[in-house]
Length: 134
Length: 202
Image (cartoon, rainbow over all chains, first blue to last red; front, side):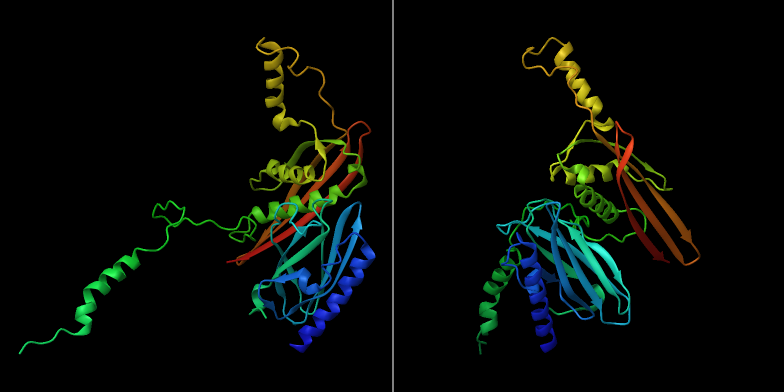
């Protein structure tokens, strides 16, 4: 529990820094807990850091995931893109499958579908280590 | 000696009636059921029914290509693009027009404009001829012949696959390549690939 709290604080700091650097990204979405939406609690996969940058007028996002287990983990993810008013923009994304090997650090990245996107959420689901939500 | 009716027997008939009514009282919804096992699923879910080309592959390819191309400098200034053929070099049937339509759909939302391509040319020219040759239309409102705009770029590409199998495993590797070509200059301006591996075990 304590570990999770510390982890969220660390992510919050990282995202705040990233948002401040980007400019134009809504500062209200400052905490990683707000950015990452898990379907159940993942036991073996952790979002370690999130980086945001606006390139060619499109929001670019990179997230570092760590598999803390020695076994390969299956992950499904997708992004939701939001505009300044918090409304979703662009069509609903399809879920994407990713394999994360034992103890591997995996990068997932995405580009916003439209220029109007200023914020995002990452939806994550790992069927093999899906505990109860906290 | 007459036996007094128990509480249960007194309440039995009303209870039975209430339970029967309650059993029928589930709120009806806007569904017409035909007795079959038909259900609606999530069109965005990861589909792993077989390892043949599927909806998740189409969605991942279209998204990767559209996001990559939308960021390329050639797309600034909203140039006209035409979608050419994407060749299917795999051994299975894949509707590549459906993939390029999804790419086109996503790119149009970013402001990219598309010129008429082969798939819709007949419908457009038929309408153009109808307006100009049937004598049914007011000349001032009829679309003029000779004003179609030529595309600066064409999108073309191919999808290939490598299939390997043994007694217990089948492995399919797909590679989708998309290319943006400058029509006048004959220069390839942008290219990207999406690789997908699907493995199934018996």
